[in-house]
Length: 256
Image (tube, rainbow, N blue to C red; front, top):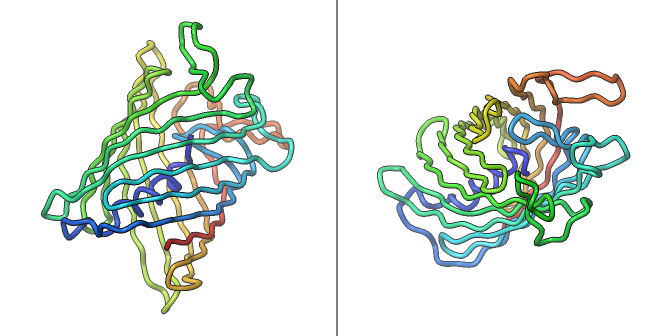
């Protein structure tokens, strides 16, 4: 289950160029190698220190890719033993005119270190064979100040709807350096009573253009949720849990 800002970064690559209402019909490859001190997804922590490589292929408005979470060390949470994750996704994005664009797709979340096969699906009634889930999504974005986005997600295995809005902005600091900030706020609606919750996150990064096609970034994040009991941002060293907290990340991205 991807870190929010990493997923948005890849969606931004897919949506890049649609503001003029047309896609360049050409093949593209984008890669990212990230390092996060915590793996947080929709306000919930699934692992501590993690390496997060990803690759995406695109042609015109179509795109597809793979995102990995590979924990470092032995301090991962019990929620997902080992914390390893492979997410496969595909989608289509296009311009709607007047700065608007849409994005639709599907994500398959898999957990290689759990006792289930690649095609074993989780089911809340216990009839499923594993932990893997399928989620569809649809979203809108606007080419305007703060680059607002609004997405809706439906996970068919966990029976949840998620509504998530986001904003981002980049401030040039020098010829090759920028200060990039972003934020998100979402609401998870669970078909089961008592499972709904709010979450949010904010990021701040310094980005540096290594070449015309590659860049590096480093920064801090803050996020959490209102889940009862504060079962996230677990610090296994301090032995504490709380509902929100800080973490940090590094990344190197390229496209060609």
